Image (tube, rainbow, N blue to C red; front, side):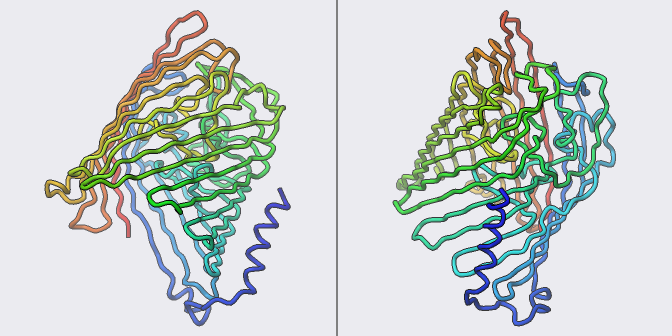
Length: 467
């Protein structure tokens, strides 16, 4: 992967020979004319986990207060410099609350999440360094206090008509708390190696669908394209590969699947294709979507059974007197998990609001339905207020051999719903409040059909002020 890394840098260097017009005449002006942006944040979460499988307290709450502060210089002969700082404090959190949220909100401290050099020539843009990445297969999750970030290189080109081409190389990853790196997912009862620190960049990566902790890896790359040549139709595709992934799992606590104590290492590839069609009607739009996701691991990781496929279908409508609605379905191969990508950002049509692919969507043999509805209250004169409701039901066929998520001949059934209200205050530009409630029940059945139930009720109240 050293060759891939050098190739990306070479593209940026070769581009310097092209002719571009400087937005700023001097380097000093580039810094002087740069732009500052930021978000002040206060997030309150309350969660009740009945039947929790982890050695953590069941019902706790946590308050995070902090800031995300960014600065980007003006361009100077096509070059620009960007930095973003994230900081968080949990001033009133108890030790039990920190344990319950240790993979999501318990990070305290700060991290320089973006520090990149960018260069643009014509319709090609290159960024090298720490940066946020949002693609279908490589993506950070923006729904936790610390937004995930990557260290590497990215290039985007739009020279082809109605087409965007992009490529990424990732060498390090910054999670959403420091504890995603310490391997205590499924830590044996009684262990107490929590850190509660802010995240940093390491040569470890989250794999969406394989748990909330990272795996050591030796770099990853991806190639993708988006095409809109046909009116109202968007076609997308992406390939990604993580090299030398060490999928070591340390314990078999709880309902989860295969244990790889020896730390087998091999490559994992990810695949994504999608078609989105919008059919405009007289006073609303009809929406039709189809998606494929898949993962393939090298022979050394056969024990994990992650060579899975996910098919997703979705149909809906929008802008009908302020209303929108969708019905979605995803299905996963019977005996292999479908890993959805790198970082916690990769998603699917049947996610339950704030709970992503870790929870159940990509498990082997899982069939999931999601029914959703939205409403924009601007239709009745309340500008800035929107709502979303969702109901999800899922049922799993028991895999014949253990996967990374499920023990052999075990299965799960899930039912849940979510409600969300978002209000962008029109009288104070930049101020947004969001209230989210999620409730779901997961029933696990072992090989003897003995049921274990876990109920989760979660409430979020987030306040953000962007400037």
